[in-house]
Length: 464
Image (cartoon, rainbow, N blue to C red):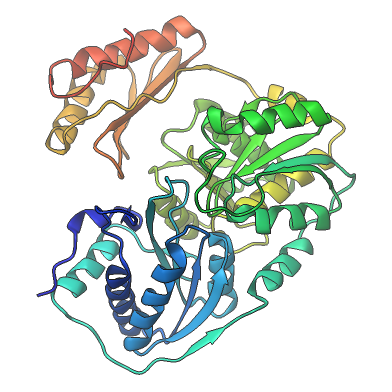
């Protein structure tokens, strides 16, 4: 029996410390993951797999070890080298919906790393990830003598395809912040190919130490330089990519960070003008404004589980043309395969702005706005998560309409509140919205009052 750290197998991926004395993502672990994923693919009648890696300092060695494991399972490995995650997805789809393994730590700190796995547009998650651990622990591997080929123009193939997919009616002034992640190798070329003027490119040189800020564009502190550059250059929009560029953050012409669910709402309204009645998916943490605006524009709004793998699976199941979640993953299936691609999402938004005679700030202002609290993330021991959610649902059942597809979301008279268990950390995630700040805070306080029955839940950062 082979022992492997159980904690690295997460809901959506495999990840953990990859540097230092506490490293659990090592080349040997990468080789085992490669053997397990290769076995999984062989048993799914797959014969080939695409492998790529981001620019973290540990990624190249992990990729080499994973490739060794995949080949030991008899797979033909197509190595695209240094790449963004959507580029890996694109190649997996273009080559016949084959397997894909991406070595990336996404938006995490430089000492972290991991693996995203899938077949075509579908990502492995949940029990599928657990199955890989089971294969490793049981030494239940298929053996073989696989082959390998490198694709030196993998990046250019992707760029050429996306450049021809979107046309613009006018040129925009764009600022890009790649956060020293992989987006700097793709974003500026694509935006220029679409006919826009990249007036500044911040931190576009890949550096796996991320010396300027973490490549997580949904945190306001990470887009301060981008906001200042947009205002300073009088640009039309700022685009920030996360470390592996499957997410994009957006700053308007006034330097304001636009929340991902509002970006989704803009894209949905634009889509529905071309495809009346289309299905659009948003996760359960998204603003009520998203669902109301989609319905008002003649679309079918679908609320679904939080998590990019869950949302992607639901898009495929329902035939939706667009989906998104609060973390910034946006999935476009209008003339595109439907995986999360920060570059293509950015392109659709640029097209929307370029086709309008209004600035992005005005387009955003045309969408209703509720008062929203921050996302609260109190620490909660795993064994208390289910009891806490049950207690909320029981105690507040009479307060409004309950949706329980992922945690508990309650639609109150003047707003809503939601709580769910994080799939990646021992925390509860809570968000509240209402027409007034007072109502939003009152809904929050109702949830907190129920949670106080659990002294082990840390509510100290919530100012009630």
